[in-house]
Length: 303
Image 1 (cartoon, rainbow, N blue to C red):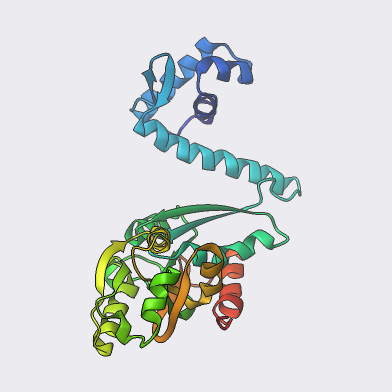
Image 2: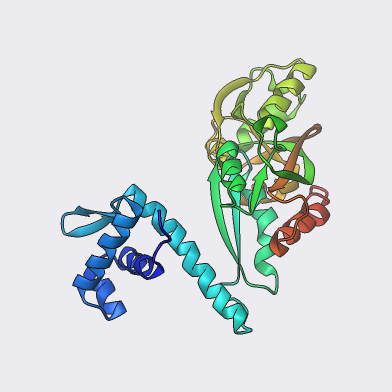
């Protein structure tokens, strides 16, 4: 395919953003016929339809959505380049594209990422949540700058990525006040037959908990498993069962959810990693994340 005509791409981008050729023509001060012709040339060049029709409205096809994703990034970077050449700080600030594995607790992800929003440099966070394998695939083609995960990259995946340990935390068990009262005494023996909410087997915590239950000689009744641990906490708050979370965010859980602490367990560790495509971290926002997590979040003793 020959090099894309950037003028055609700009017209496509304007139509996609404004929702119609008529509105795009007004913004670009061009006739609708001109824009329609340029769009047809772009579609011929790409070899795919970019728009379809829904009634009187234009809607992006799958190919159009893909092209729009890249066009957004191209024109954002063009704006940043113009700012840098002119000696101005980028108007949109530094962009940090983060993938968050679904098994990572949302409150912990927030605590890890929040410090970059308080730095003197303007940082624009773009967060994606998905299964770890999907995020690592995106990282490998540089669609992400960073992936937050609860396990390091396996060498078996054959992906060029590097693990940067953020820290580790013991776990805390929570439930509604009534359920917590029933199982707080004689812990952990009290967990035998207790309703338990667990992360799915894809989580390293799931395996660690099963081993710990075996060592304690207890067999909780697993009533549900979750990829989304925020959903797991919502079920726990509703009284469906006992759930765990890193002790590092224990205070946040007690403040946010109507639950009570049952016990803390230091023998079971949750470990978290920042995974990047580079061996040595160069992105200033990623450096802020890793250093703050190591020295503040995972160094703090639970309340």
